[in-house]
Image 1 (spheres, rainbow, N blue to C red):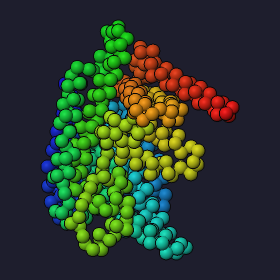
Image 2 (cartoon, rainbow, N blue to C red):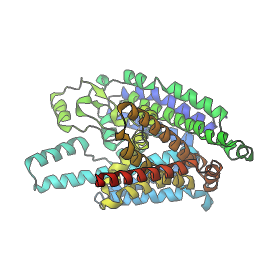
Image 3 (cartoon, rainbow, N blue to C red):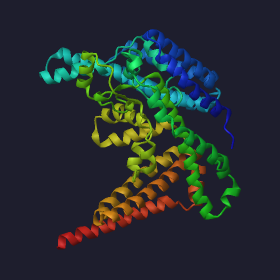
Image 4 (cartoon, one colour):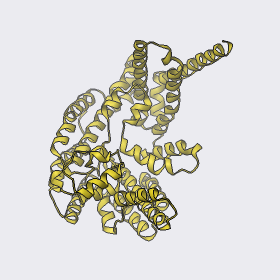
Length: 466
């Protein structure tokens, strides 16, 4: 299968972004750097989205108006607006408008995260200021709030917000980064001291391998073939095996795009913070006292890292023994967004996880295949947990290693199986494929849960009798 024209344009823009990022980093004036970054971004969106560019313009303009009008309630209003617009965006073809293309969907998804995140940042800054003015806390608490205001607070103008919306860095592929991270990149102290080339080359070294694996596997295994009668007539083992290379195609494509997007950030210096400030994915510096000390001493000639924009941990995805650990390594900046702006904001703890998963599923799309895949996650996690708690501790060290490898094999096959919903998209197509392999992983997961519970119950009875 050859790459589509959209994929070729996409890949070309990703590659071009690396030298462009390097040129942007060399600009000293913050406003000039900001304008050039946004001009490049608008040009990219116009090239890949064409007439659909109007969707992102509408989303960002209305969000900026909401934030300008009401900083107190902008986070709620922006959330409703952006997700409400996503409904319209995905159903335009029912309204007589052109159906949006793949790149437009990617731009809209990332813009939704950025706009809602921006509104929360503005709202949180207002709350921090009011709390400090209230003077009803101890000295230590006030110092902590002052540090948060200084290094995490935001006060963007209308133009700043528009420019953030269209900054070319991560515009097509992510990662998600906060407005404050963007602001810090524009106002970087001594950008020439911030390393770019070395971390970029270190991060880039496996990207050609991922790209090559994507091209090779996609040339021999195609999604279109899975929907044919000829495929359904193949032997069971062939149909069962087919999901392995299909998930490989999916992973290698995402690895290539996300590693390239991290390199784009590195080329421009976005997300570079002193290592002493202990940066975390999405958040940025977590040790604000250390950052304050560096700032006061003017010691910007120090060791930096790019953990803030670290979006994919391929080693974790491939080698983590459990689904839970593997998922934590996947699209980490979006996981940060979900945890920070959804999970922790839901006041009722009992429904936090359910609401977060619902928001995540809706953000990904309205295709039934997504929801079928998401529904396989809870039982798979349950199976892993019950097997680990029931059996693992009973084995020797060597036995535990063998157990972990078995668990890893289960994880990989579960994700292969789960991924088919994301690829096939339709309800009938997904059920047809899963049915053709006799819902194998549903069955295995059910058996593991039953076996784990039976042995756990037996162990409890034996313990009581002793």
